[in-house]
Image (cartoon, rainbow, N blue to C red; front, side, top):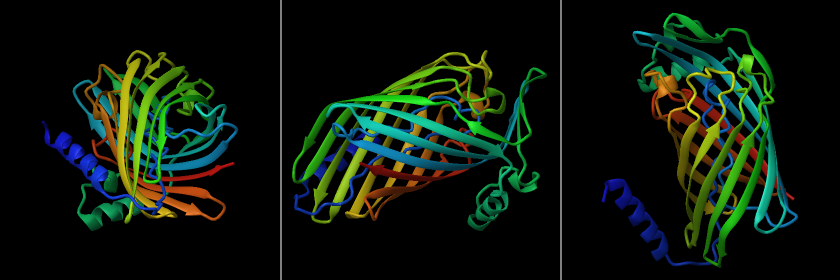
Length: 337
């Protein structure tokens, strides 16, 4: 058995051995975010991976914001890529409990590509902690330039800021398992997402493709005398049409998954960390920005605000360098009715 598998089994065993009490910490739920690289966020990669569905007749409305700072330059004998800019993505999502087991939803994103303002802050941050700059400190600040060339042919070029409606997604979910007691809450759900080509692909607001994803998600929240401990995860696949962005290099079948763990010391706050992984989004490229599997880590937590609003706060880093933005700042506000 590998060390990660051993550690996971020991963690689950410890959760089962902890004595239960009537202490109720804020349940641990996944961050509703995904890879915001400008050449990946155009895909229908699901941000909603929770295994807890709404009850019949219940609504949830959410507004999320991701601010991604991007700088990556890479080349080989036949390819050159430069991704330099900032991406802002706001998403309004609504979900409805059709029955106690069936949930429907929709997500409407608004995407803005620009030069931004975070370059100096991130350069200073890297300098303070002794982190590599990767050439960011010598490049023009607050610039937008996305460029990819292969075999002397320019296949991607964007230098002017633009924004607008992105690709709309339709959501559906089915509750496979939901067990609740005075000490634990275990859930399993099957989720699907259909992404439609409603965004302008010429400015990377959309992909021009139809994407369909199917995923299985699960979670275990355990209440203890010290608060709530939770683990969750999801795994699935996505099939896409070629679309308008590098259509001859797109991978039409992509696997993805996430896993997270968290702790809630009280019913108004929790802390969590989440890893997201995918297989490559493009083929016929050895550049990490296109042809490598992606890996990112999100750190943060959730606050329960007056009126039963839930506010997610997270910071995402690319743990597989250049496969995701350098840093993403995530906020997500949700309310159930």
